[in-house]
Length: 215
Image 1 (cartoon, rainbow, N blue to C red):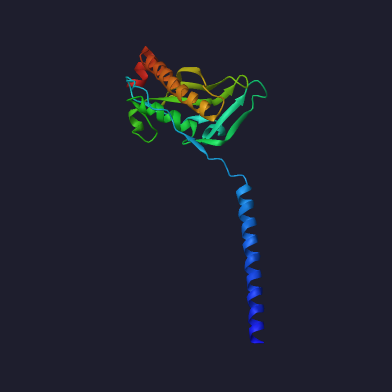
Image 2: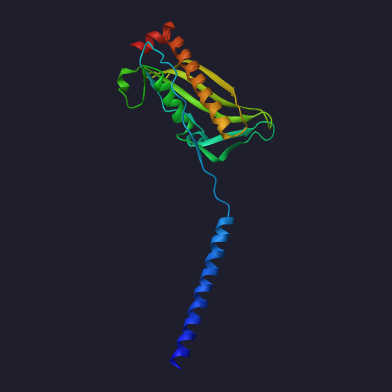
C-alpha cells in the first residue's frame, strides 16, 4: 500500500513538472516572436570650425526657439506634403539644437561670452532666434538639412538694435533617413556658425557698432 501510494505521488509530481515545462516553453516562444524595440541612434553636435577673432567681447544671449528645438528630437518636414514638423522615433541628438548652436559659436569665437561669464565686460549682445533645424524632404528621394536663423547685435544699456539679419543654410542629405538628415544638419551648423561670425565680425568693424560695443 505504501509502495502504491508512493508511486502515485511520483506520477503526480512528474505531471506537474511537465506542465510547468510546457508553460515555460510557450512563454519563451511567445517572447521570441514579440517585436523588439529598435535601438535609439544618437547623433552629436558637429566639430568646431576654426576660431574667429572678434574685436570686442560680445554676450551671447540665451537662444530663443520653438519647443521643438529645445528637445533632443531630430525634426523632419515633408515639404511635398503637409510640411508639418515631425520627429524621428528611433533617433535623438545628444543635446538639443539650441545647445549645439551655442556650443559651436562659443567654440569658434575667442570673445563670445556666455551669460555667466563676466557680463560687465560686454557692452553688446548677440541675440539669436532659431526658426528651423530640420531634415526637409522636397520629395521622397531628395532631402536636405536646413537651419534658419534670425539674429541681431544689440546694445545692452540702451537695448537698441545696431544690426540685424536673417540666415538660411541648406545642405543636401546623402540618405533619406535620420542619419542622412543629422549629417546634413551637422554640416549646416558649421556653415551657419561661420556665416554668423563673419557677419558679427564685419558689424563690429563698422563705426557705430565699434564705438558702442568696444567701450
